[in-house]
Image 1 (cartoon, one colour):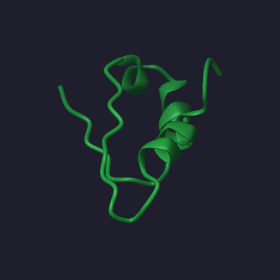
Image 2 (tube, rainbow, N blue to C red):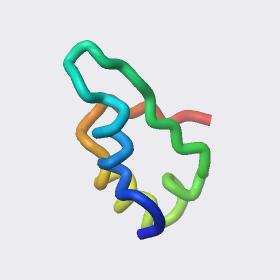
Image 3 (cartoon, one colour):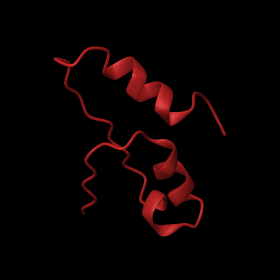
Image 4 (tube, helix red, strand yellow):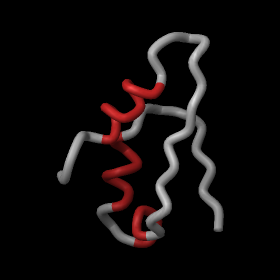
Length: 52
């Protein structure tokens, strides 16, 4: 994997129960390529919204 693991991003974004934030992936390959599911699986179980 290149760079920090995606779950590290979430850990830096959300530190307390009052914190809010978004992780935005703008690369369509995350839903179009087989390896994209691995990236999504590496994220914490947060609400996901996949759109155009």
